Image 1 (cartoon, rainbow, N blue to C red):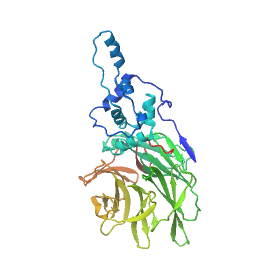
Image 2: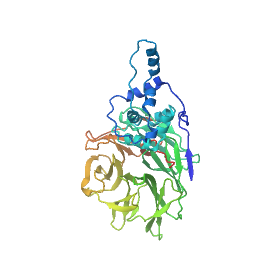
Image 3: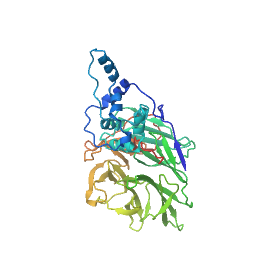
Image 4: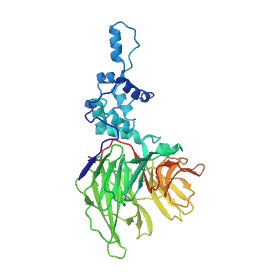
Length: 434
């Protein structure tokens, strides 16, 4: 098992013993300390919380000067108010990852707090529920001998402004031209590395982990389909590999399914795929499950198969009453809902399952007047409705689609030529090195 950790882009003092002036800290905190709601109960252990004494020294930039002047009878303005530790945690949980990595060197308490896995979960919870997708990014991949991975904020594409795609440092020196993105979950990106490994990478903190070798017998016409998600019952991330092979040389395909849990040293086999053969390159992660479209030869139809990551068991999901004439269907995720895009040649209908697993909860949002079969990336905000704008990938183009005006707007992204894969990920402090 190989674990890689790179240094953050900004200089960080790992010991957490660096210092900063009180005035510098006040300049950081004050813009974020206005208008915050009363913080909920903190999930940070008491040993990592700032004591009132330490918080006062940090949040009162001129407290020592006021004290000195008071001793000499000089007139001085009252000291700055003291922020309670819970409010400081609330403020820090809203900051971008890059700034948090820099703030670890403020003091030992801050280094301990920001490095704590519980704070990482608090920060993630705040980030993923942000209605404006402030901490969400689009990652673009250009496969080939010299693999290029770039990224830009989702928010910048929503504002219809010209934006630059920043090049990310792909962690593998030896790159395979056939590597591709398996999925994204809680800030972790999963790449399939041919022929038999996966790489889980958090580009925000520059940490990655390579899986053990997937042991399988290569056969003519065989291929592997993947999925990546989180088993919330044990708070572990899992990669699912579905090995599809021609069992008799006449097109009768069978499957072998293996699961790799981050932190383990090997893959393990589970029940084979229950119905048909999945043809999506990646499973869609929703509500603790991975979901694929499968071609069921026995029914001559396309079905949706869902794998529960906790129970590691399958169910067939009911589809909406979408009518006749459908040519293909594509799965997606909009907000926290599983979505299906049915293509009819001249249009594509978008449906979402508001209550996962319940057929009656399928809701048709709108149709997209396009002969292509676009990939759903994300909505404009987390409140999905019939008037919500959504971001689509149509081959090599990104488009925001407005259902009210039936119009498309393509964001202008610089330094991003030739990409063929796009995926949404949220900045987080979650480490793949479990």
